[in-house]
Length: 453
Image (cartoon, rainbow, N blue to C red; front, side, top):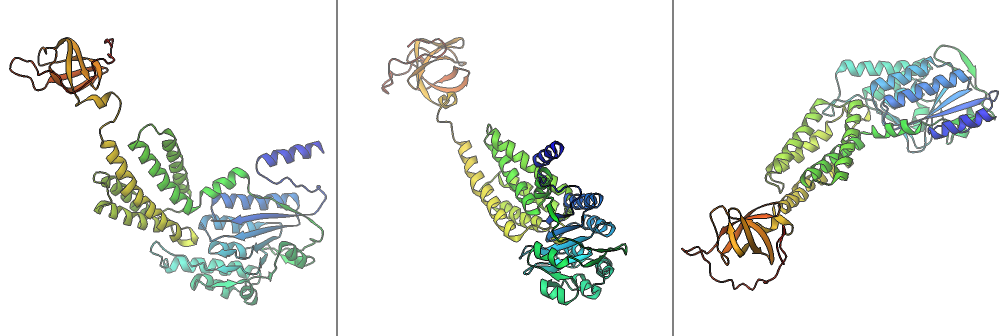
């Protein structure tokens, strides 16, 4: 008992399930395939099926809701299902879910294929970067594979093949009537109740009778860390992370010192690059995104969304559209692409433009603000070795490279080194003297660098 409690606690901390059946209890394991079919999902499903087989589970229910994904990851899952020693029940659920593209292959690779009302399956035609069909060879290969999966379990392979050749998609009822799936069930409990006592033939030819009445249903979701990584592989999130990270880094470069924006921007860019490294990124889309970045940088020389900014926005939209191999549902949604392009254009055309204008304004405070101001020599005068001047109601140590300046000479500040000013005479007559000061400056002020008040 103590061992099971410790094991439950360890799995809970890892993000895994904490409900366990006794070793002798019959168990139905539930796995969840949700989102893009990627290598992380493939490992999760493959390992989940293998573990259930080793534990002697009665069956595995694979609940599906996916737009599709990577062909290699799909093949990894279907091969695990075909080789499984335990019956795998593919269940497209909940209502509104879909088993599209690669998801249709996975659903038909199961000995039992079921759907919830309001779901759909199909639309598995591979498409190219321009949205059109890929080569006949590729399409025929996909169609033949899907047909073979369906016929393995006695389903209508001709109808399944139309998912690829015609891009056909069927509702749950249509799929059952067409002989593509085995049954339609509104809930998981209803599905298991209908399957209880039914004979199921595995891909190996072995036939098993499902005895699922009163079994323990054990959900085994993807672990916390793996689920987070899987979520990060969403193409829409990767696209947003790329541009948001880039914008924050640009902001850090324009306004140095904002460590938070630079750090967050770097993390977001790393997330985007991680996703790009796993998802099927196309070189055309990637080059267009790089071109948009270059054009936006050129736009910074003349901010305000000019010709370079417009070209950059167009390259951004096209780059997002062609960024991923659009076969299998791996694509940036237009609902994400359009707002992101508008926000990026506004950021570089409006926000960056205003920041650059503000950066070029003269400082309103601090030592640099004194450069260009006028004042007067006080004390015994100023020469190349030093002296004292009064500028902006304060007395400063100052030097004059052009020669000695008598007390009362009007000067202009031409530079500052630390708290020592460099000045030049202003309105000096031939004798080097200036008219008396009448600008109402205070006669007492603080002295920098040891000056007197």
